[in-house]
Length: 506
Image (cartoon, rainbow, N blue to C red):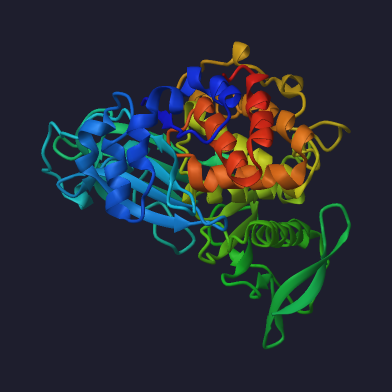
C-alpha cells in the first residue's frame, strides 16, 4: 500500500530536500497554492475537506467523500490530530487510515497515511454470518473451538465485517486470543461471501494496597505494591487506575492463579519470577505515566496482567493481545524472562503500539513494531543491549540484540543489507525481528546526538500521533522528523533525519 506525506512549508529547505525523494513531501516550491486551502482546520468536516485540497494527484483527493473522522485527539502542545478512515456502506477499510495534524493556531502542519488508497468498492457480497466466519477462523487456525481456553476471558475478541482494501472484498476480521493448548493471537480474514481465508496470521509479539517485598531472580530484594485480604497477600497492585496483577501458570498452559503468600514477604524461590514480573510491570507503568502521562497501555487505565512459569523450559516471552506471558527458559538459552526490565518494557510497548499506531506485524511495519518496543526498552533500561539480563545466563556479555551494533547479533544495520524474507511464520513475517536492526541503528544514531530526554519525547509523539498501521521505514523517518520539529525545532529535526539517512533510509 503506497503511503505519502504532505508537509506544508514549516521545515527548512535543506531538511525538506532530504525527505522529498522517499516521501514526496510538499512545501512552498510545489504546493503553496493548494496549501493555502489547508491553513485552517477547526472541525471534523474541515479536516475531511483537507483531503480534497491536497497538492499533487493523490487518490485520496478523488475518494475523500468515503472518509470519516473516527478520532480527534489533542496533545500537550495544543496540536489536534484527526484520524480518518474510509468507509463504504458503513463498512470500514481494514488497516487503512489518513491523519491530519493541526497546530494550536489551527494550521495544518502534516498529512500522512494511505493517501494513495484507491476507492473502496467491494466486488463481493455478504452471505456469511459472523458466527459462521468465526467457525471458519477456528478451522484456519487449526484448533477446536471447544479445546481453547483463555484464562476465563473471551477467546473471540472481534468478528467485524470490514473491507479488505488490497483485494476490495468484504471480509470478516476475526481475532482469536487464547493461551491453551498453545498461546496464540490469530488474526484471520474470512471472505464474507465464499468463506475462503483471505489472510491469516498468528500475531504473537514475542522476544519475549499495601506494600511488601520479594526476592527477584538474581537474589535482589524488591519493594512491591501488593494487596491484603483476610490475612492473604496477593501480587496485585491496586494503586493505579487499573490493577497490575501477576499470575502463576505453574509450568502449565492453563488454569493460572494469582500469586499469593501468607505474609507480605514473597521470598520463596518459586516466587522469584513473579516478583520480577510484578515489580518491572509497575516500573514500566510508572515510566509511561511519569514521562508521557499515559495511564496504562491504552491510556484508559487498563489492567496489566503478567503470567510467569508458563509451560516448561519455555524460551520466550510475548504479549498475546491481552496479557504478558513469560517462560522460565531452559537455563541455557534463557533464564526466567521476567528477570529483565527491558524485556518487560518491550512487551508492554507492543500493547501501547496496538492501541496507538497499530503497526501491522509484518515486513517493514512489523520491524518498526519490534524496533519501537526495543527503543522503549532502552528508555526504561538505558543501555544498547536487549535482554542481556536473561539471555544465555552462562555466557557473560551476551544479548538478544544490540542497538549500537545490530550486525553483532545477525541483524542488518543498513538498507543495503535489508533481508527480504517470506511473509510467513517461518520467514518471521518478513523478518520483523531481523530487519528491526535498521531502525534500531537509526535510533542509536539519534539518541547519541540528542540524548534520552529529547529522544523519548520524539519517539513517543511519533508512535502515538503520526505512525499508521502500514508505516514503512521512510514513513517512520518522516514521522519522527515531524515529531522533532513540533517539539524542538528544525535543528533537532535535521539530526533525526540524518540519523535515518545514515542507515540508508532517504
